[in-house]
Image (cartoon, rainbow, N blue to C red; front, side, top):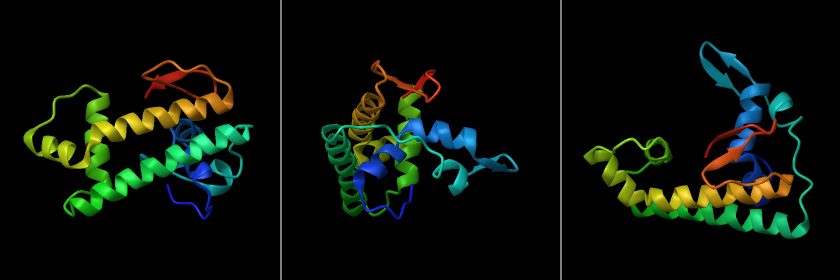
Length: 147
């Protein structure tokens, strides 16, 4: 997610499944691919009425997530965000990793990436006042989707 906002709190909220769910519902498509339409996806997105403490916690966790990704990419130049997140999706789906994916997992510390995302999801959900169930992410309509 790229944003012109210089606040890790905004990035933290926009980086979560809650916003992804919103953007997929509000955006458009090109053939079979989703298209992010800023005026419909960002401009109408209902940010949580977070307390200053909640904003600080989300900001701190978003910065930790960003630092983790940047560190892994610098330490292992062959890694990419795409390969790390592809492995993360396989972990979430409980799909076995092949040897190449296991190297990506180990170099990218993808389990740590998963934990950071889960913690950030929980903080954002709390800012919305939604209950958190480990391993589940609440969607804006109250439905749940796998984390």
